[in-house]
Length: 435
Image (cartoon, rainbow, N blue to C red; front, side, top):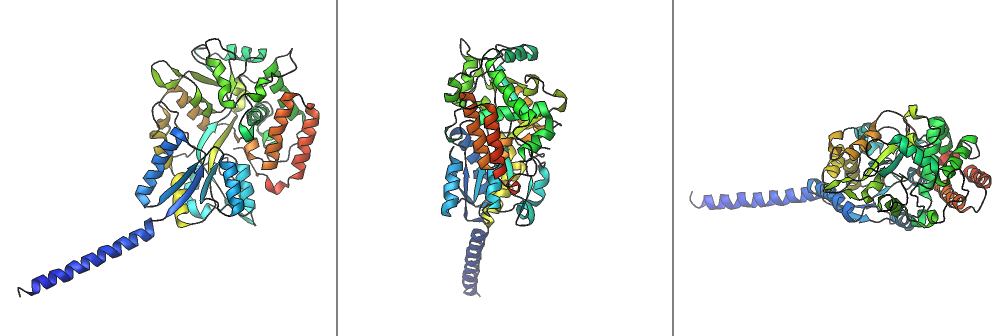
């Protein structure tokens, strides 16, 4: 009897060891592995985003191989062409993602996300028909509002709509920079798009942005001319050359100089991250905004229309690990954690997941107002040039630069843009860009 106890203990111990080993093997099969992710966030933005990815790894055991670069579009194109694309990539352009989907590089997300898709409006996740099958191919992980006009709240306290609208009409009051490396010109496309939306409304905007409306229509031509008049004033005919060479990230600095060189900037909500802060309050920027409809001439303020943009995640490789990460990135929990992990002196990323509580954006009044503008009822339209097929988007950006430089008359540019539109099959355009 005494000798059987040690033997029994040995047998039990071996069973426990084998069971533990088997458990480790099973765990590694279900929660191990690696998923690759390409996006644009670097520096402090990358640090915060990595805390969200670390939480995913801690929960699933799946390691995320993250690559952050401002040239993510060029990197992705090269990797797709060489057959080494990442599992997941994040781009700001649904038009570009639609191109990849039509070419068979992007995987449908309906079977992956399921109920998670109900947490987003159709503006953010339009359904594409690819190979006879309708599905969703991307999901927004971060969003911005573009129909904003920024000013120095320290110099213009309160809600100075009338004063700023008068400044806008003078010309020469705008902080403008078209420079953005390979994508130079996009700040100008934002201007034209927003003016068209505010003046002509959702119907004209949607028709034009989805390849049906003409570039030579009266509404589109008026949008370009209104932009020119805002930049130059009624008396001038030429836009300052510095507009073409100034980087968009530097354009707004003139608002906050000791002797300001400009008073207003038409730019997306992300630009505020580069503005100086108010004294003694690191989370409070000196920059505040008005809806662009309060400054753009002949805007229809009753529609509460706004142009938006986002960072959109698409799945290029269908693996169990990629499916897990896509589901996580689309979730309210991940996007709320991303906002909450952002330092007090940084701008919190905005989410359009309806389950993310608005309370996470009450860090300062401006963030609160931007988040509210993103979620308020009214017409919401995605950035038109980002939604257009890449060939159309690139031609639009070039036309902006040529227009400002005075290289060609506006009518010639618009006629040429119509030719580009006609060369792109309607099947390559998004079916809708507005709510």
